[in-house]
Image (cartoon, rainbow, N blue to C red; front, side, top):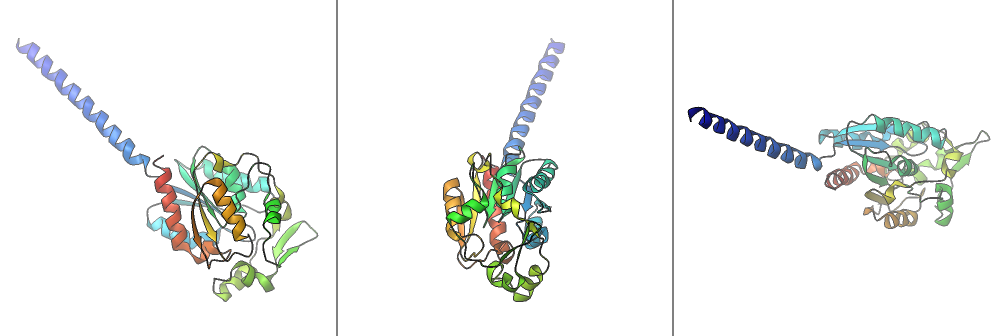
Length: 262
């Protein structure tokens, strides 16, 4: 009888331990479900990833793991491959963020299984069969500074860069950006989107209300069509990714929090 009682006691203890482990595992899963900690930032045309540093600094201080893509701007396929390489390095779910031309890149790359949410910052979000250049004709921007070189690359005329691209940044900063441009292959703006990720995954959009490079009306159309959670900064230029880092970081954190709960 004594041996039987001991056996029963051991079984009860084992069952209790198993139940405890199950409950701990379930709690851990629920806790982790709302915590997307990986953020991937994609820059637009004519600039490089260094412009993301103000946003990067805020997110890192908040405990996020942030990666910044440095795509070459030499062709859409090469740029897309650069984004995919960084996404493949992520160790868990991530939020993919794109500014300007980078929006077209995240629209394609967002199909990567690591991506659980998309954030567009004054960015293109083309649908299947569309190009950024084609949509720009539907909602014409007001800039007059785009210059095309005979070798197939484009740049923004430095004399107009401040007013057209970065009017809400200090003028000295804008002048440096103007003279540190990354020349961009004209062909990237004509790439046709095939499988837009925003049709399958949740998205967030920040409209720059004073943008001269991408029409604010085009941005609003993109956001509405994608059903994006949208905020608008009326006075923001196309360089909103640098001029309003706090607001952008807040939107990204919202995406990371809400996408992680889906």
